Image 1 (cartoon, rainbow, N blue to C red):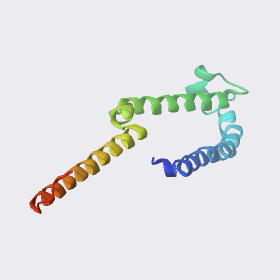
Image 2 (image 1 turned 180 degrees about the vertical axis):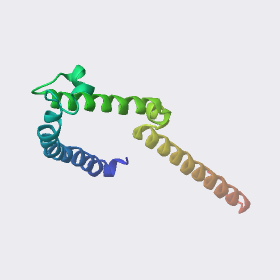
Image 3 (image 1 turned 60 degrees about the vertical axis):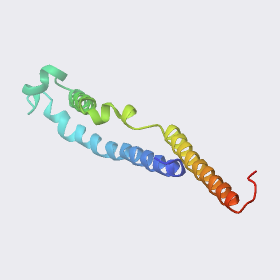
Length: 134
């Protein structure tokens, strides 16, 4: 991200990340209370499948939700690591400061080369005019 827009980009990114927190609370609370907790009470629909993992009774529904969230985040992290483009991003993308320094050095070399070429041309035209070159 170019330095002149980094503040805007990072602020927008942080806003998007933080706005999901209250949205998650609005969804997860009712989901846990109305769906998951009743499903993991004795005789509930998910007791046979997940009762051994998180138990049965109070708190088991939110426990299952935490296990599922942890496994999902672990899978997302692993999938990112398995992709070379994500895993090698530090090597593939140059640091902005280094890229800017290289561009500046290239521009200086280009300008210096033109200035040298220009002085040689001027010297050559002065010699042809019979004037000594400095």
